[in-house]
Length: 143
Image (cartoon, rainbow, N blue to C red):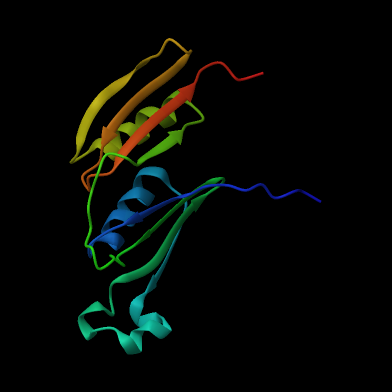
């Protein structure tokens, strides 16, 4: 029997463009994408009609990668800041280059991919939805 480990996943909140963003991330990263709209949930009865197509919950999964998102914004509204980043540890040089190119399209390449002092290829970017990504590929496997 394999013991389950506690893990932390990123949960992104959008303001009506969750479906577009999560579909973009699937195109960049691959994996299986699931959506549940407000209209498909019991909340449908309590929400305005124009919100029925908004995303209540979405999940993108690929192996150990789990990225979640929603259009459910709190009453305070959506406030973007620089305190949360999505850290993507890639498994090959090809993967990191492909993901970096796709994720930065329409956004900004803040720190281009380069060899780091810790033996990895590293870079960061802000995607077209304003989310910050840190990409890393350890060229030497950890022992």
